[in-house]
Image (cartoon, rainbow, N blue to C red):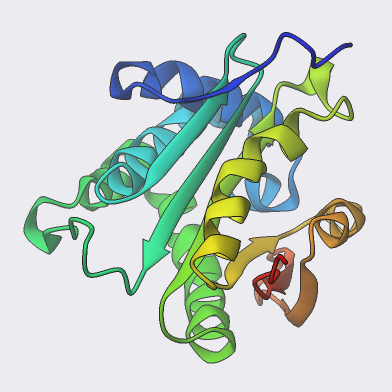
Length: 208
């Protein structure tokens, strides 16, 4: 597949349901997904709701990207940036997660969140860019779409001298992120049969 005709564009808010369906396909066999939704039918029916509400949350002050042919999604949040809107806790879309995900999956999500929140707060402080989700349509993975999607914010982070941070649950993803300047900053096994988490940090690249 050639990327010659692919461009990165902002994801319209109206496309969040379609983007959530894409992310659900991209993360179908991700260890986090398998932990949240061990039942295939439940995963198929309720899994996209997890992405919809988290993307609605991230749209408040964050940035979401896709490609011109809608092959992948990148969702960023920006911690410590006082110029961006903040989420009103009372109206946070994620308040609807317990009902939208189902009781069991939501309780398992809280187990993961306890670990990721602890790692995030410990490993990176101050203003930074957080790659919340990066997913590519399974039939187009390995063709450079992911690299294309992360480029705008990585370039912006370098210009503003900001670090970038993310978590992944797949060891095979580490090499991809290393190519973009990320290094493993921490790792942890989620208890109660949860996934293994790698936390990656990227210092800004000073360009001459």
